[in-house]
Amino acid sequence: MNFNKILQSLFGNKSTRDMKLIQPIVEKIKAEYPKMQALSNDELRAKTKELQKYVQEYAKEEKAKIAELKAKIEDTPIDEREGIFNQIDKLEQEALDKYEEALNEVLPQVFAIVKDTARRFAENEETIVTATDFDRELASNPANDFVTIDG
Image (cartoon, rainbow, N blue to C red; front, side):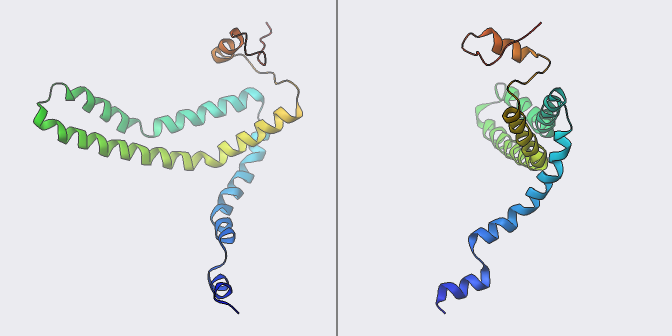
């Protein structure tokens, strides 16, 4: 038995370790998928917007503090600005950490939405939804012949 086989028997190979790492996430996605299948096209769109808003709101406090500090910089003497910039950097990192936490939290739902959306596009030649302002904007551009608005 060579050295590599001994190591592999002790620690496993990379694909096995990777599968152990992602398997809980895959199971959560599988649990969310039937819920997304049950939604109408408009409800699926609303769910997507709801998740976007949730992620954006997750670090709202940090973003507000950053904006407040940035507004304060102009009125601050140059020698005191470094401390404010350090606070901003710290808050931006906290906001990024919160966004990562929120994104990991909604990840199973988002993957289930993408999977079901792909299924709907594959099974249906056209998708009928209630038009939004974004749909109207897309339809107004002649290059976007994939969007039509009836009514």
